[in-house]
Image (cartoon, rainbow over the protein chains, first blue to last red):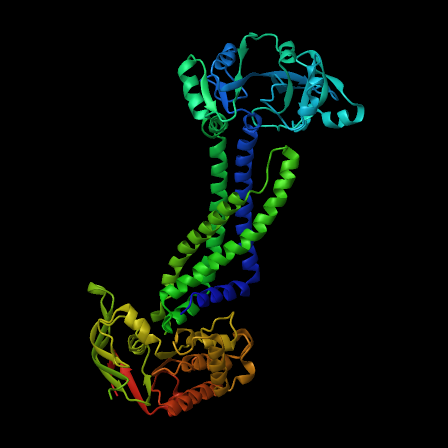
Length: 386
Length: 225
């Protein structure tokens, strides 16, 4: 007896009750969309939170050991950057400065905190899309490049730039000129970003010690062994800095958002709720299908169909519902990702791995519902049929 | 050759301890090959329980019960499931699957049969049996669109299609009018006689006693005549 026959019976049974079938599919689709959105937000959060470290070019970085996340770094003596140059394998050391400044919206005058990022723009250790053509303009006093992926509350900067060319805005009570835009992205830690040269950063952020940096990017000579240099630097430098690779820097930032905030848990919990609701709906439908066909199922048992055959019918129905709900669910999620990404400027998009994960979760959800509903089959007792 | 059904000293009780209520006591019965036996008796006389034991739908308690060569006393569930595949059951209600056509319902019986491995064979055999019960024109119709008598004839076709060694029927005419009931049992008799299948039929219905080769009456869990 092939597996196909109980599967076919399951499909014929589901097909016969259109209204029930569609409500079940809607339930699975709902769970599917909910899980996709939750996981999408979660991953967008981590992607956007790590956009800054991702954009930094450098084989090794120096950070303060107490820095928990890059949007609020602990600073350390800038001289550590130059000390690394003692090693022949280190070719460039670029200190990076970060601070929050108050931005005045050029249209309505409202205030909002923006992340200021200053570094030696000519060193090539840090590059954001759009930055290279702006490098010479950024050398002028009081100039910045604005991150056009910042939240819209900062004002329609990109549109204004296109309309009237470079114009002046106020940051931290100082007038600066926007000479162009770069692409970095709003994150949960920073609503927007402004990129500028080291000197212009000093002009804007006056209250901090000039000799302190927040992060140092190191470029190594071609062919240098990053792990060996990392070890040497760790041994040489004082304990006020940690030497990390690019991957470690990204992982450090990601780890902060995953563990030190409840955000990761919230999204996991949201996904779980979606799955529970979907499971209850599928269970109800499968249970109702069994309950309304008890006499027929008992007859099948009397005819010599094994309990295993009937269990396969129930699991087949669960599998069909999972498949029929997942396909529209994934399509709806792709559309919603697009809408939400435009509204929030978070990097939200369908990822094949996530698709596979959610497919697995949806099928598991339906399988559990099937296993629970299956217990009702025990009530189909052929001895009661006569 | 042994009888298709041979019962000796069969006893059965429901409940435990003080609530124990015997429904069959020291019962002996044989059905010969090709024989049509009607089982009658008042409600509660144990007819239906006896039928469920012979049909391997219940585990035996006492006595010996050989059905189609299988001893049922102490038989495991798997042996009982296997035996059921060789028995054709007809119930008081047709219990057809509402979402399948008459032909698909009949073909379901053959899914368990090793000789009917592919769908075209099953559908062809089902069509042939439906023709024999006079429903050739209704093969592609769902049960909801058939009359009560027609549904019961589909159920008869379903019971017969796999050429079982024994037919067990429980009040097959109870839900039918006089003419339909008469037609259904006569159809059962004709088809069974053709292939030598014995039938054990429980009934209250005096209108169908004429199809029997032998009538067995039960009372208080015993055969009285």
